[in-house]
Image 1 (cartoon, rainbow, N blue to C red):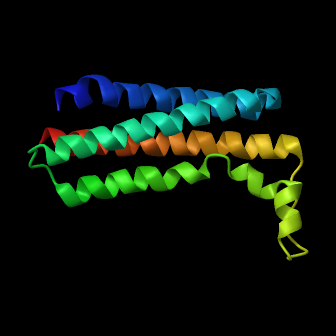
Image 2 (tube, rainbow, N blue to C red; image 1 turned 120 degrees about the vertical axis):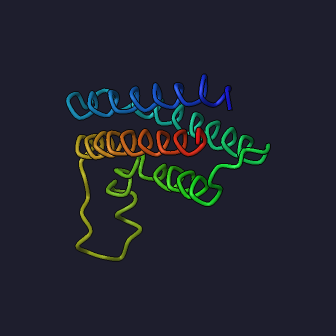
Length: 138
């Protein structure tokens, strides 16, 4: 538990802050979309490390609320596919859909959608990480 509370949890919060800042920067300056893509890759890695470390803590004898903690971890994992959701509006994706009313986004719109999604996911994952540490500490 000391490793999670002292290293992993702060690292998750820092990753959330970096993701939120990169998302906001991408909304303001579309040219930073490439940077956001790199930050998203790093965020996936940090989230994987968080999930693995929480599972190790849970199954190493911690008598915290197993179901609730697993639920929060699943919620954090379910949020990750929202990162990069702008690609669904790309012309390539729209060409594969038979719906003639499907919107096709311009590259700057895709970048802004990805930036907004990154901010939302960063806040949500930070809250979920906070809930997990509260449960594990009790």
